[in-house]
Image 1 (cartoon, rainbow, N blue to C red):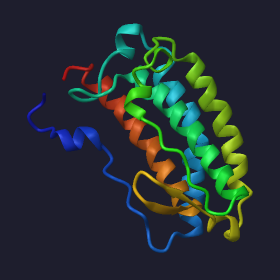
Image 2 (spheres, helix red, strand yellow):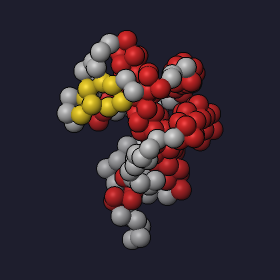
Image 3 (cartoon, helix red, strand yellow):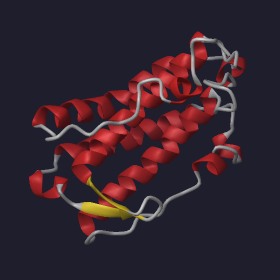
Amino acid sequence: MKNHLTLEKLKFPIGKFHRPDPITENDLETWIATIENFPSKIKNLTSTLSVEELNWVYRPKGWCIKQVVHHCADSHINSIVRFKLALTEDVPTIKPYEEALWAELADGNSNDIFPSLQIIEGVHARWVLLLKSLGKKELNRQFFHPENLKLANLEETIGVYAWHCNHHLAHIEQALLHKGQF
């Protein structure tokens, strides 16, 4: 590993999510634009990679690029479902899932990332349409996350997923920059 790179910096190349207080209309617009632009950005970064490159990791004992792509499809499917549950039920308890185990399943570890890029494109098109329709009342809707025992409101969750998009794009860029040499 490169001496100047700590494991924490490799795990969180853009840092951890920090909620602004207050969350402004500009924050929401920026976050939604990030979510909207994510499919083209991840496709541009990954669609021409060789199988060897798709298997480059972004840190020691980290996921390879293909697993990051598949994870984003899985994660964002779960997120839009959580948004819809929060919009249609009174503070629903969402279902966590074992991300690391999903990444080891056949579809999460496949060298063919095209289906996951298609999922990301479709999910994000629907998700952005939904997000742009939300008013203040809907943005304050909540769900309960049993893993961290916290209530999450949709307004902040938009920011978390915008961060998530940028976080994983940075992981892919990191793997490409270092050619997976960790």
